Image (cartoon, rainbow, N blue to C red; front, side):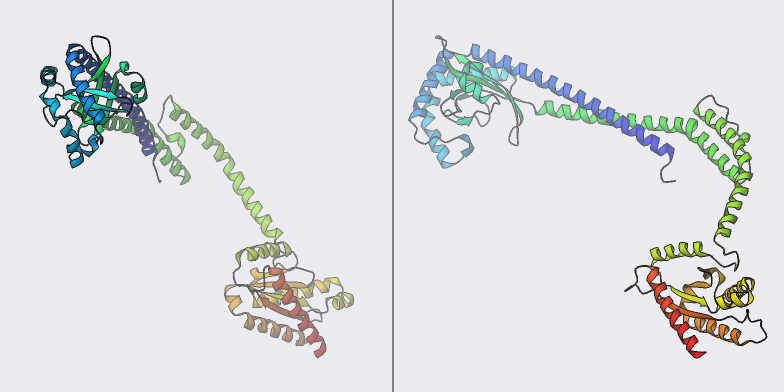
Length: 467
């Protein structure tokens, strides 16, 4: 048994549990992820709105104008992706004077205070250059490696085109994952001056590494819980299936084997249940009764059919195989392509015997020829294919010893013909020819028989010339 029923059932249960569990975990994870992200996004929006309102817009405007003036007059604008290079340092050196501005210092101090109070990673203010599609740092309140005034960054938000068309939209919450900063959420809101003009964007960076780590930890916890659930479900499933399905089926299997060996009957089973197993037991009991009634009839019918089949392949006169049996052997040999040979025997003077002594004596002559052939060859390989024509199929040892056997048959016919103690119709002779299968030239047995027939007629011709 390659795979038992209990194994297949448990495998099916496990697959279903895994599919359902995976689907449930995926939905829960998506909901958890979306909830956490939404909370962080709302928090970042609230912070940037607060910064945009609380920060001194006039000071921001003054710093923006000073940075923009230097930025516009700079011939070589170097972006932050070249951080640390001489070119980048030379570019930033143009903005050193910005750090000495009172407005810059005031904004920087205010941003750092808000940053610490709100417990966020970084608060900074940028000016958006719509023409060059980039953002230029004005003030960065980061405690470590702040971006200096004039530092140029690409605009990373997904709605970049919309932001450039309408700065009042602000920078919608955008999550990135980089080797340097990990998971980071950035959100920006416009800062308006007293005339209602947008002078810059207040941006907050919030690290989401801790949140993502918590999500992963929770997923591991859920996965372990799910694994334990699978194990418990499998144990319970194995117990129930083994008790209510496998054991009754094994009992039925043993009963079937015992019934086959005539050791017991299905009626001896003590499985009285009101379910499918009980229905199966009742059906097998009824089947047993029907089988017992049919067995004797089937045995006698099979024996009769086998007997008729044997008789249908036996020549009634000579008791050797007939043309029907020969045709079946021809088909078998054509399909097998194994080495074989054929001996063709054609009785001499049958017409003379029939005309002289009568057909009854002619039948005796045919029987005598058949007996002579069977003295040399296995009777099961001898076939009467015509009135006075016989074929012998040579295989295995007969094939290997074909020459000696054919010569022996020649000698028997020769001595039989010369035995004057026999009646004229018993002193029979025959022409004999044989050929073997050659895979280089023979596709079917028909061509082998044709060569044997040619050899037989050559033998008949030589016998007539010798008389």
